[in-house]
Picture (cartoon, rainbow, N blue to C red):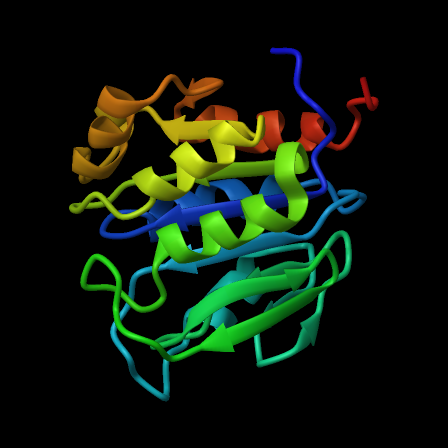
Length: 194
């Protein structure tokens, strides 16, 4: 794989993806040179404890995004329930409450496409387990800008529809099992600019 350096990593997932995240984030390098943004389908509930769960398992700081949140390398940011997460600049995330996309808010497609427009070939995104096709259009946009597209191996997914549909429509740069993901991600920040 000969790709540009990663300036942002987005991870999108739906049903069956939390267990994969909990397998990844304890092993992420504290020195990651880019922010990590997680977009998970979840019910709109004001007392969600997902952020606390991720904090408990992560050695990196974890924050739920608020409107106009400044992004820093080495941080994990979680899209809040019932809002789309958009990148406004390379260091600023915003929230949007417009219509659901793929029956979802936050929508993985919306965040992936937004990041691709801002970060172009320096965007890396990983799509995890899920039961609908959200994320596929976003990955296609990232691929069109020359970004790096990663997909969970459908065989390893609790719900393989989302990664399987994606792989039917685009060629991923890597298809990873959960046990391979943290090592792959940690290797991204060491790559040099071509």
